[in-house]
Amino acid sequence: MLEIKNLHARIGDAEILKGVTLTIPNGEIHAIMGPNGAGKSTLSYVLSGREGYEVTEGEALFNGENILEMEPEDRAAAGLFLAFQYPVELPGVGNANFLRTSLNAIRRKRGEDELDAVAFLKLARAAVKQLAMKEDFLKRNVNVGFSGGEKKRNEMLQMAILKPHLAILDETDSGLDIDALKIVAEGVNTLRDETFSALVITHYQRLLDYIVPDMVHVLAGGKIVRSGPASLALELEASGYAGLEAA
Amino acid sequence: MNALPTRKLEAWRYTDLRPLSALSFGAPPVAVAVPDLPELPFPRFVFLNGTLNPTLSTGFAYAKPFAAPPTFGSQPMAAINAEHVGGGINIEIPVGQDAGEALLVSQADGVTPFAYHPRHRVTLGQGAKFTLIEIDEGAGTYWQNAVFEIEVAEGAVFQHFRLQRESMEAFNTIFIHADIAAGASYEHFTLTLGAKLSRTEIEANLLGQNALAHLNAAQLLGGTQHGDFTTIIRHKAPNCPSRQTVKSVLAGRARGVFQGKIEVDQIAQKTDGYQMSQALLLSPDAEMDIKPELQIFADDVKCSHGATIGALDEEQVFYLRSRGIPEADARQILIRAFLEEALEPVTHDASKALFEEVLESWWGRQ
Ligand SMILES: Nc1ncnc2c1ncn2[C@@H]1O[C@H](COP(=O)(O)OP(=O)(O)OP(=O)(O)O)[C@@H](O)[C@H]1O
Ligand SMILES: [Mg+2]
Image 1 (tube, rainbow over the protein chains, first blue to last red):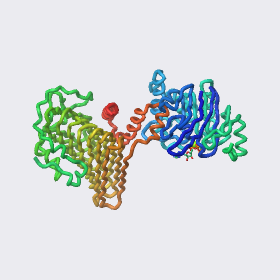
Image 2 (image 1 turned 90 degrees about the vertical axis):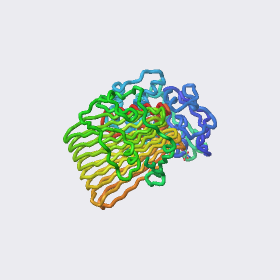
Image 3 (image 1 turned 90 degrees about the horizontal axis):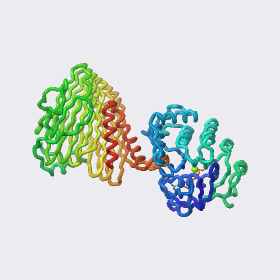
Image 4 (image 1 turned 120 degrees about the vertical axis):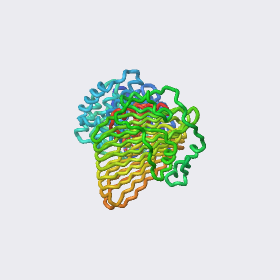
C-alpha cells in the first residue's frame, strides 16, 4: 500500500525529515509515536502534499505510484486521507456542502457517478449517526465553533464518507473523551480490510487499546529509530523516549 | 457641463475620473439590437440607451409619469445628472400596499461613446412594501450617471438590489439619496462586476426612531477595473440601527474603494451602527482603499466598524484540496464563502438566485 523510502524533507533551511523509511502493507495499521517536534506531522503533510516542504531525497510509493509528484487533490482521489492534527475552520462553508463537494470531486476523478443531494444526505446522516454526532453538524460551517473533540469527530465523519484506502490520523485521539475515542476506533476498525491501511500518529497507548496496530514505529529526530509489535507502545509508555534518538 | 469632481475633493480622493473626462460622449444613439432580458417573472422597466422602451417594458400599477428632478446639495454627479437628465422611473407605492417586486433593466450599446443620466424616484407610503431589482448592462463604451431619490415612509420596507454588470469599457456612477422614516427600512445591496470604472454613492438619512438602513455591497473586480462604494449614513433620530457589510474581491490590477461615513446627531441616542469592510486580494497588484469615518455627537451609542485586507488563506485551500477538491474549485469555494456575509441579507429568493447565477459565471471568467 505505502512504501516510504529514505524520505528527506525540509522547511526552508531546516531539514525535518532525515531519511524516513517505512512500509505499510495492504490491510495493516501502523502506529507512529515519538517526541514533540520529531517530524510526525511533517511526514503526514509531506505525504498529503501541503506546500512549503521541499523533498530533497527519497520517494513515497502509494500502490506503486510516487505520490510526491501528485497534486493534493489527486492524492485524495487515489485514496489518501489525512485527518489533521489541527482541523481547519472554513467560515461561510457549510459542512454538508463541503462533504458532498469533496465526495463528488473524488468520485468524478475516479470516473464514478456523482451523488445527488438526496442520496448524499442519506449517506451523510447515517455516518453522523454512526459517529454519534449531532445532526446539526451537517448544517454548520466547517469546524467553525466546534470544540476540539468535535473537530476531530468531523475529521472522522469525512473519513467515513470518503472511504480512503490509506488514512493518516494525526493525533486524532488528542482531546477526545473516552466515548469519542471508542467511536473513532470503531470508525477505523469498520474500514479495516485488505484495501484499507492506516497510519496512526499518537502520543498515547490508550488509542491503541482500541485500534490494535500491526506495528508501532518511533519517529525521533526525523527518522524511524525503532519499530516493533503492538507491545512496543506499552514499553514506551513505561520508559519514555530517552535514549532512542541515538539508536 | 458642470465639471467632474477631481481628487482634490476629499470625497473623491481615491477615485480618479480623468479616464472619464478624457472621453467625449455624444448623444445616446437609437437602440437597434433586441436585448436578451433576464427571465424574471416580474413587471419590468427596460431602458435602452437611456430611453424607456415601451414594447419591452410591461405595465406596473404604481408607475407614475417621469417627474422633474430636484437636486441634491453639492453632490457633483447629481448636479451633472440634473443638467442632462432625460428620463427615469417614478414609482409611488400607496400606503399599506405590498407592491411585490419590479425589475429595472438598463441596457446600453456604446458603438460610439455616449452618456445617459437617468433620474429615478421611488416613494413608499406608510407600511408599504416593495422590492426593486436593478440590472445595469451593456456593450462598448458609454457612461451611465444615475440618480435615485428614495423616500420610505413610516413602517415601510424597500428592498433595493442592484446588479451592475456593465461592459468593461463602460463607466457607471450612481448617486442614491434615501430618506427613511420611523420604523421604515431601506435594504440595499449592490453587486458590482462590470464597468471600467464605477462608483456607487449612497446617502441614507435615518429620520425617525427605529429606522433601519442596510447598505451592503460586494464587488468582484479584475483587470484594471476600479470600483468605489461610498456611503454616508446619517443617524438623525434615536434608536436607529444601520448595517453595512462590504466585500471586495480584487484580481489582476483591480482597485477597490470603500468609504463609509456614519454621522450620529446629538439626539440620536441608542444608535446601533455596524460597519464591516473586507477585501480579498487575489493578486499582488490589486489594491484596496478603505476609509471608515465616524462622527458621533450623541453619548449613548454603539458603533462598531472594522476593516480587513488579506489574501486567501492557503491553509484553507490545502484543507479543501486534501479532500479531493481541485485547486480552482477550492479557491472559488473560499471566495464564495468570503462573500456570504454580504449576500446573506438578500432575503429575496429570486434576487438571491440571480446573484448566485452571475457569481457562478464570474468564476468562469477568471
Ligand atoms: N513552518 C515551519 N517553519 C519552521 N519549522 C517548522 C515549521 N513547521 C514545523 N517546523 C518544525 O519542524 C519540526 C517538526 O514538527 P512537526 O509538527 O512535524 O512535529 P510533530 O512530531 O508532529 O510534533 P507534535 O508531537 O508536537 O505534534 C518542529 O521542530 C517544528 O518546530
Ligand atoms: Mg504533530
